[in-house]
Length: 555
Image (tube, rainbow, N blue to C red; front, side, top):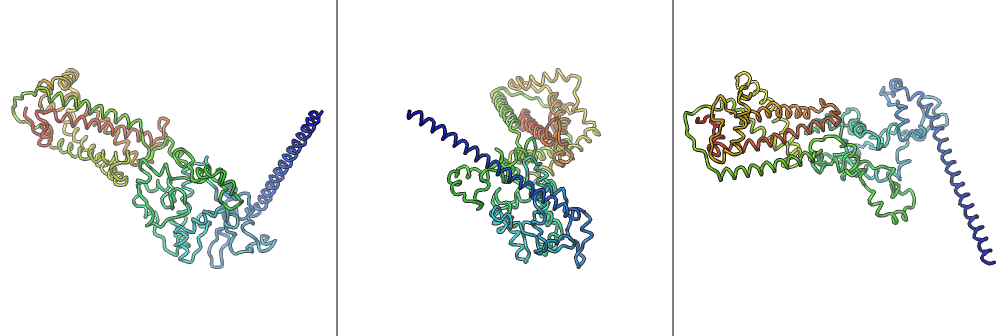
């Protein structure tokens, strides 16, 4: 009997509990609906009220219609579309611009309650207290305050157009928009004088060291280099002398492109409201201490910040590596050096040819020798500077980039001059295959692979009319008329990146061009390694090198 009564009581209790939960949920839902409804009403009311304001201030011509007593124009125009896309789109204009009386906006000019609109701290004081603390430490505030001028949020951020960066937004457009806030003063005479009382000297001239300066202004936010503690204090602008600006900070393996640039804190992230003083968050911080610590400054991607999207299939000089191409190059180079070592060892153990010398002949004309040695010097410089940029080692990026660019232009000029010389002098025929090309190629290959070990004579001989053996003809034709043009065209394209189409063969255009340039450079290095070794295969180790200096050889 007792069990039956207890069961009935338990069922009744559960029923009452569920009814309470449903009722509470209903109340919560009702409250939420009321809240959303109230918010919607407020937005509709603000929209209706603002429409009256835009009937005048939305007209771009209003600025010319109204001037001060001294004849100065006022910035009275507000773009309605920009305002609707801003973070304040749901706010009434009168929330910041308070009228002195209820009918203050019935006629113009309006009479306001305060001389200036309400400042940002009126609404955002607690939420942005960390930002206000940063602004107080910024050189902007310190320098401008010395002049008795005021520096506030509105000095950089237009409340009518400001919007938070979105994850779907193109980073490049966000950077341009952010930099416009800086240029508003730093490249505008009126804006600069307004805050500093100084006459403007073109601030962009201060960035004389930047290659493709305008491209940097379009792609890198000013605060990326001029902010305070790395990646976290974008509102602490450092004095120029304290700004550590060097190319390696971005153009290297440990690039700021993957650790610093284009980071923004998403205010939608969990725990973003913690430590704002908006509510008692003691218990929340205690229970979630590790998660909160991990979320502070946490990157939006494994590469850091938003750079998976920034660098996806893009090429940035000195940053974007091509691991597969690098690995293949190293593998081939190591294999080639091992083969050369084996070949050299077999030569040392084998017999040496006995030479019967005849008359001395000029094998290499002065023009060819001059071109050869200048070309060798240029290539040595280009390889060192190119590898420094590509791998981020050996040289600073700035000297490597400028050195590579200028000496590459010298190489282009030298190549063109040499082609003209070959054509005008008839020396071009030296590179063209002869009638016995196939049989002579097999004979030459057999000599390098076998005959050289047993002391046989080089079948090519020392004939000035045939100074290039068939294997040399093949190699030099490939280098001069395939590899050189590939290096030159791709290099010039990277030198003037505007000419590269955004997409080539389904890839980012600059990335594909860079692959061609890097691949051609790697092939050139491999060619030079083989070339240097073959230079030791004459009558003595330095015989062929000596002939390229004097031009003379004995038949």
